[in-house]
Image 1 (cartoon, rainbow, N blue to C red):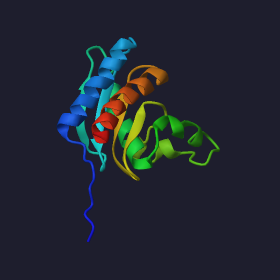
Image 2: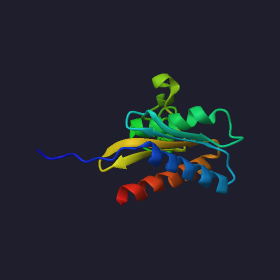
Image 3: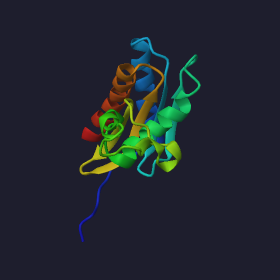
Length: 144
């Protein structure tokens, strides 16, 4: 029987991802919250920069959750979830937990999503850039 190898997001890696995301945000003059979740959408690591908005802790976790659950960047869901579109009403599902604007990215291991990263507090572009910086940490680690 073949052995299944897979990546899992542990606290050390998730913490490095969150640190890189907040460092990227700071470099772009944004105050954000950043979160990493595992394959089940459970929080692994979180950080809120001093002075970041109060909605960020909820939104960052939910962006990571949404990216994991839907296997897509949250920015990719914006148009799909708009009124009259294919996924209209998505943001109201799951008790309003699905976030359909930029800042959430899935973490892929081959053809499986094993978690997600979410960033909230800046502009859509700042949140996405910070999430991408955190994602880069994962990509470098998983490639080695």
